[in-house]
Image (cartoon, one colour):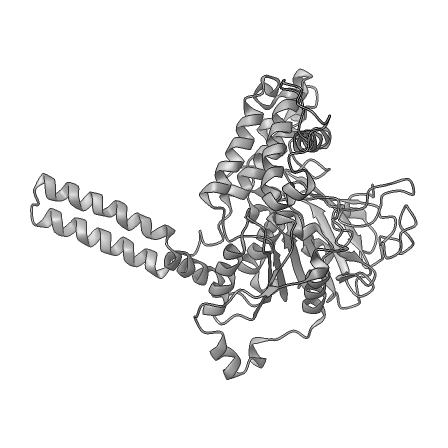
Length: 492
């Protein structure tokens, strides 16, 4: 681990070796060394709590050019980290979680771009979070203690704020692109809303403008699996010398089911029995049971339970429209106030007043309509300045293509330059981790195409971007079904 950023060397240097990977693989960024960036200034979070200081763990690949115009920021998903590409040693057998995307001549070409990936605060891979030391425990004169459950809840906006602080430290005023899949796509989207002048391109992959009730429900089941584990100890399991392993395994099993498709599970496992016959017991019998338990066990060995809780909460809270009330919402509120006011003025009977209040519940339902969602997103995207690439996958039911379409429709309705591709892939939500040629080609083409500024948009192009329902473009590809290899997972 390198020294803290207060004394780090010139960040324009290449922090990775473009040699073959640990296993002699070509096209790898090679051996990479994470860096620690320390921020001594207090960080006020959306929950109104303040971190007195914080650290970010960062990896970089490629070389920053002289005018610092070739930098790409990678935002990780729920279980991801700063280690997006390459290897940490010659003996390392596991490449970074997006190694098939990032590297020499790959979709995100490190011969051309300077790529930055950081571990977000609240995670458990080195940046300040539940597993790092709480400075308050030191100031009280006691033994140093980890934050544990005392670490504040964080949001996507908080992460983007710290990423902007890192950008300042690196001297990068404008990102060539901000790229992310799943929860990483949410961060990329938030970047375009919160810092519109600081990125030229935004790549949102397998993501959503906000979680559905069903997705929040899945997250709640996962959280309850952890919270109800007797070894959780109200989050103080490290101090108690325990670990909520069973709860974390169950949480991951639930999550993993949502990342795959029924067809994929049928093709991979079917109803195959592990021993070839029924054992008439509750131990593992079906191959799919064995697979899920293995995934849960492996995850529980490498991830922190408190981190899982706050990460899923960050997912639930995400909504880029919160600070941008839509016109239809304001009109609905005014209509409701008028209606109630009129009833009171007319000295309405109790029954009439109850009927008016009942009608107000119907007005609240407007928030869930497609028109309301579109209006809210339009308000959020109205001031954005970047070009967008939105990518979805046909079999992703966690964040279905229709959710990406909502983003595309809002961008088109506000006249923003947007490209959209719905990739035919059998891997479900996990598709964003696979090396699917047309998917990778779309990302590479978008990143290397000339930037289209507002000034260069012709009238005909603007006309084409006026409000209308844009069709989902499927990219049917046999390549997506063959020769597609997954990265070493960083889901949701």
